[in-house]
Each structure stands twice: as C-alpha cells, then as structure tokens.
Image (cartoon, rainbow, N blue to C red; front, side, top):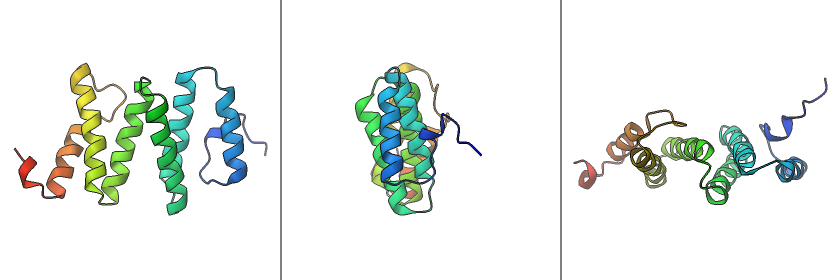
Length: 138
C-alpha cells in the first residue's frame, strides 16, 4: 500500500526521519494558514500518543503554532484548547487554566466561538473548581 501525499503531517509517532519529512513539507506549504493547519493536525495527533516523549513533540508543535502564527485563529484556538485539555488530563491546572482562559478571552473579545468546541469557558471553570482555587470561584 502506497502512502498518501498528505501523510507527512498525519503521523502518530515521531523520529528523526519523520521530523525531517515534516519540516520539508512545512517549508513547501503555500502560506501561513496552511503551515498553521499542518502544525495543528500533526501536533494534535502526537498529543494523543500513549508515549510521553511523543506527546512532548506534540506540545512543542502546538506551542510553535501559537507563537509562529498567532493570527491564524482557526488553527491557534483549537490548538490552545487541545493543550488545555491535555494539561487538565495531566492535572497541571495552571497550564490548563492558562490555555482555556486564553481561548475564552479571545472568544469573548471576538464575540465568536468559531474554531473551538464551544466549551472552553466551561472547561476553564472546571479547571478552577478541580484545582480548588477558592479565590477565583466568584
């Protein structure tokens, strides 16, 4: 079976060879929107890995997306929410809260939840409750 031409950004594992192929594909991407989308797709797939070292690559790719392409909201917002979900699952409440609040603040400012699960504000509240931050419960 021959791999598809788009498989370069849909890996479920990571190594030096895959990294090189991914970076080459990213260089060939037409514009910032495409690059951001490829980083989002690949980062989210890796963040679902059962292996911690692979998840770390996913975190790095999603963080890179947010820092390198901050105006690509349709990729950045879901990436930030995914990072919030990940950190919440790891009980890293500080990081989870940061990402959920960032998404919520953006959605409030833009009066739109497009690109999100529409639940970032509830996840933010759940994070505050789960971490028992009494000072933020109002």
